[in-house]
Length: 236
View 1 (cartoon, one colour):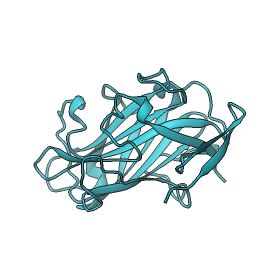
View 2 (view 1 turned 30 degrees about the horizontal axis):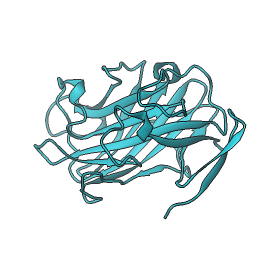
View 3 (view 1 turned 45 degrees about the horizontal axis):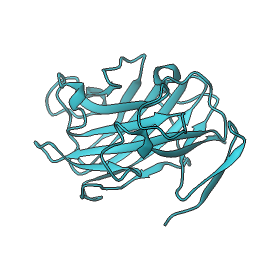
View 4 (view 1 turned 120 degrees about the vertical axis):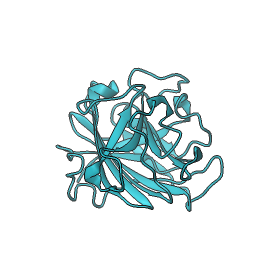
């Protein structure tokens, strides 16, 4: 069911109305360290990702993404249901991160229509590898790899596996604002643009299902016009 969402935009002094629930970015004094978030995310509204442009359904994959920010970082928590999550090769070409179990997050502060990335637009990919090969899939033996066109180091994006099972996983991440090309602090009421994607593959096969928040195509990685609105809210 569509819900009319109306929120004030402090940065432009006008209201914006859309026919869907905007993604929430919760503004906090201090965000959580990935993997040590405690109850920070409890009670917050996440983005339900369950749109299947190519077919597939919730029996394959679905998820909820949460966003928060403080004066230094943007934070993300992704709670994913996946019937066959798979770790990836440690020497995988980052440009192939989409072709298997992975997440993609698209975000920008430029709210004007545009078919090419602005300076503040980012497309990030997240996938999981094992520190030591074998049957140990505990979070301690798993590492999240992150790419923004190229591999990022831990200073540029810190991401960890919080939980990993044969049917679900949870990833938390923190991304410095300057790495995302964002140099002004967020303000309550500010509009942003975003899209979220889950990539699903059957065991031993290439990607067969993509799950988006709102985009009805595979174009979010290259066309910010396909992204939808988010809104910054003060975390209570």
